[in-house]
Amino acid sequence: MADKHMLENGGNDFAASLLDRNDCAGNKASDEPHDKNLWTRAEAHRWMPVLFAGTCLVYCARMTMPVCAVAMAATFGWNKIDTGLALGGFFWGYSCTQILGGHASDKIGGERVLFFSAISWSVVTAATPALRHLGSYTLALMTMARVLMGILQGVFFPSLASLIAQHAPEGEKNFLNSINQSGSSLGILLAGLLGSIMLDWYGWESVFYAAGFLSGFWVLLVWQCFLKGKVYPKQKERSKDSQSKNFSCSHLLSLLRKPCVRAMVFAHLCTCGTSYTLLSWMPTYFSDEYPHATTWMYNVFPWAAVIPVALCGGYLSDSLISQGYSVVFVRKSMQFIAMGVSSAFVLPLSFKLSFPIAVICISAAMVSLSFTSCGSSVNVQDLTPSRAGALFGFMNMLGAFTGVLMVSLSGYMIEVTQSWASVFTLISFVHCVGLAVFLYFGDAQRVDLKDSNSFALI
Image 1 (cartoon, rainbow, N blue to C red):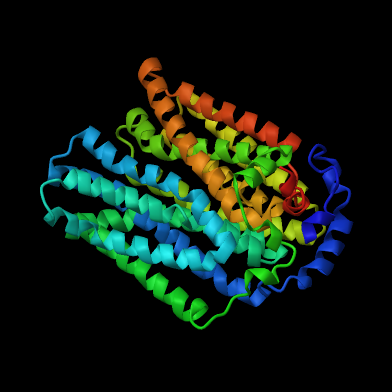
Image 2 (cartoon, rainbow, N blue to C red; image 1 turned 180 degrees about the horizontal axis):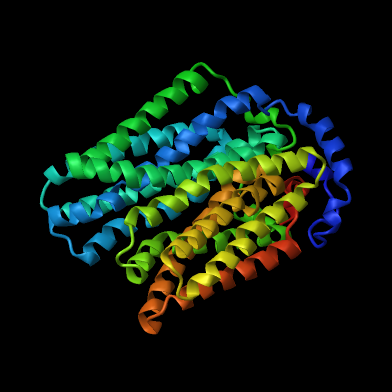
C-alpha cells in the first residue's frame, strides 16, 4: 500500500524525512484505490461520529464504579483496601483480552468484535446494581463484575485499531484516531459531571443504569445503520494480507526484532504509563497542594481542553500528509509534541505554583499528550496494517501493566519523599527516554508483508 513508498531511511533520519514529501503524496494517491476494503470518504465520515460516541460510552461505562466508589463503600461498608480491590479488578481483566481482541478483529473484522463486545459490557454495566441482591458477598461479586468489564472492554481499542487500519483511507486515519482520543476525554468528562449529578439525585445505581442503557442504544444504532444485512469482504479477498493473518508468537517475535516496531511499542508504553499516572494522581495532587481550591476546575478543565485540540491534531496530521509530507515525519512530529512539549509543562509542577498556573500546566500537559494518537499509537497501522489489532493489543496490554507499575511507584515515592517533585521528574524522564528512542528508531514503512514470506523459516 501507500506506506511502502515512504522514505527508505526514515527510521534514523528525522530531518531527511521531509525531503521526499512530494514523491510520498503522488505514490499514495495512486495506490489507495486498489484496496477494495477501504472505505470511501463518505463512509469514513459516517463512521466518525459513531466511533466518537462509542469511545465516549466506553469510558462512561468504565468510570461508573470510580465515580460511585465512595457511595458504594458507604453502602457496603468497604474500607480503602476493599475499594481498591474492586476498582483494580478492571485492569487485570483489561490486560487479558487485548491480544485476543486484536487478533480476532484482524481475522473477522473489527466492526464485528466491537459490536459483540459492546453488547456484553452494556449488559454487565446495567446489571451491576442487581448484584447487591444476590447475597452478602458484595465485594467479591462487584470485583468479579469489574474484572468481567475489563475483559469485555479489553478488546475495544485493539478492534478500533484493526478496523481503522483495514478500512480507513490514508487521509482519514489520523483524524479517526484523534476522534477516539477526544471521545475518551469526553467520556471521562461526562462521567464525572453527569455521573456526580445522578449520584446525588438518584443514587449510585442510576449511574450504572444510564451508562448501560446508553451503550445498548449505541449498539442498536451500529447494527441498524452499519452491520444489518451488510456483507464484508472475506479474508481471501485480501490477497496481499491473507498469508499473514495467522498471527502467532513467532510472528510477534519476528516483528519485535525490528527496531522500528520496538521503538513504537516502547514509546506507547511510556505514554501509557505517564497518562495513567497523571490521571490517577492528579486529583490527589490538587487536593494536597490546593486544599481550598475549586474542585471542578481541575476535574473538568483539562479534559474539556483535550477534546477540541485532539481533533485539531488529527486534522493537522492528515493535512500534512495530504500536502506531501512523509508519514514518518508527521508521526515523529506529533510524538515530539506528545512527549517533549508535555514534559515542558509537567516539570514546573515540581515547584510551588499558584492554583491557576498549576491548572494551566496540567491542562497543557494533557493536551500535548493527546497528540500521541497521531504519533506512536497510530504508527502500528503504518507498520503492520494486516496485524494492527493483535499488535496494538499487545502494546495496550503492556501499557496497562506499565501504568499500574508507574502508579504504584509514584505512590511509594510520594510516601517516602513527602514531595510531588519526584513524581513529575519521573514522568518527564520517562517521556524524554521514550521520545529519544522513537525519534531515532521510528519509521512508517510497512514491515508485515516483508516478513510474511519468511515466517516459515522461523
